[in-house]
Each structure stands twice: as C-alpha cells, then as structure tokens.
Image 1 (cartoon, rainbow, N blue to C red):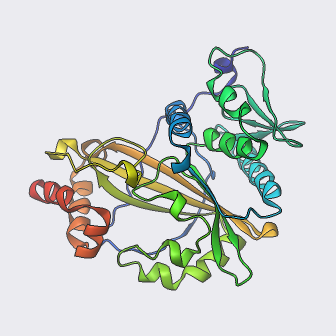
Image 2 (cartoon, rainbow, N blue to C red; image 1 turned 90 degrees about the horizontal axis):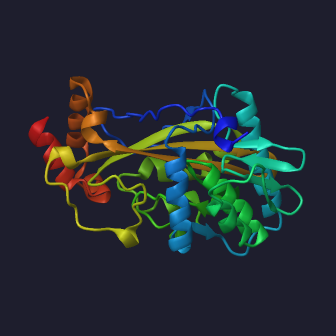
Length: 322
C-alpha cells in the first residue's frame, strides 16, 4: 500500500480570527479543548518549506541552551510520547506522532524514529521522494530526533524548562517560521527576558514567573496572536526582512499564530507549540463584522505597539478603506 493510500485525508485549513475591537498585549491563556496538534491539507507544503530552511539556514531555525541538560533526550522522548497520546485521544484527527513497537512513526513519509538510538528507519514501501529521510539520516542522533519532530509538525516548537529559581527558560527552540524575531537570541532566556522587547507587555512581564510555573504544571493552554504582513511567506526572520511592499489592501496578508502549551510536570518542562497561519487579508476579513473589528483593533493600538509590530503602513491601508 502506498504512503498516500495508507494516510487518512487531511482537512482543509482554517485560519483563526482572534481580533478584538480593543487590542491589548496580555497572556490570555485559555484551556485547550481540542487536540494539541492539528494537521491540515497544507501539511506537505509546511514540511517542504521547513526542510528547505533547515538545509539552507539551519542556524536561523534551531537554537539550544548551553550546556544541554543531562536529561534532554529523556525530555524529547516524553514530548514524542505526549504527542502520541494526543493523537490517540483524538481519533478523528491525523496524528503527527504515533507509537510503534520500537519507537514512533512520524507524519513524515517513511520516517520511524527508534526509541533506543533515534535511528531513522525507512518505513516500507519505498518512497519516490526520500529527501526528508536522507536529510535526517545524515544528522547526529539528537539532532535527528529534534528535526524529525519539527518536520512532522506544522507547528514550530520549543521546550521551556524551570530553573533552580523557578523561572521558565527556553531550553530548545525549533522555529522555522518566526514572526519577526530571531530564535537564536532567545535560547537560555527566561520568560521575563524573552518578553522584554514586547511593547505594552507589562502584564506579560509581571506574570512571567507565574506563567512559567503554570504551563509546566497545568494545561494544555491555548492563545492566539495576530498581525498583518505584506507577503505570504511563513518565515519572517529579521535577517531576511525587506522594506514594506504592499501598495494596496489587496496585497496585505493576515498572519495569526496559534500558541499551545503542554505540561511535562515530571520533567519540570513544558512544550510550547506555535502554528503559523497566513492568508490573504481579504479572504479572512470577509464580512462587515470582521472588517469592523480589525479596523477598531488597529485604531486602538498604542503608537508603541504599532511600531513594535511594524504596522504603520498596513494600518493606514486598512483604516483608509474600512
């Protein structure tokens, strides 16, 4: 049986629209009621885009705090097991990770990770495209596991770990599609330092220690953040930034992140997932209510938030029409 025939069909993508008329920078954690990971029909395109970036600019996609914790491999196995549990608990969805007798089958054609040594085993039948397998097999074992999981998810992902003082620090970041920030600059930082540049982010910074403890002990939780962009690119790394180039409303894109935290309390860690959605603004703000909410939200932003998000030109385009 072919890989395509064996896998269930993926649902059409659905772009969240978490826009409130009064915009505010705050944690807004909500208890997650559905699956932790959602794969949709764009999964192959996300996987191809991740593989391209991991080959071309790996240093912009993966960052590890130094020195690595002695139990990092144990934590990676716990993440894979937790995601496998999530897939089994939601049989109506397509799992990103599933357990096998020897390890885990990932939502990457032909990839099965062995539990004892992170070896990648080609899952018969032979595949026409083995680019992911070839890439993974050339890596050292731990990197193989990290990148294999990254390719299996449409989400970017990170591990947060409580330090001796109870602050949650970024232990590992596998972020191929950052929204205007550099993953390498965040490795080893705590929540407070990570959110230091956020405009009007006092509420998040004040709650940073409590938030760290919460996501390690409780959840899963979900939140969304959004912005407007001048292109459809999933990756917006600051080293690749260009001048704003959307001359009209028709050229704007709505960019939304679904952020999910998954507790791993026995390891003092939390898994942090970031699923980036990008779609033409006119396709997302497709009725009067959404257009009104968006215009009001942009109008309610402080100058500091507009500058931080780089929304001057986009806001002018929206408010001139809506």
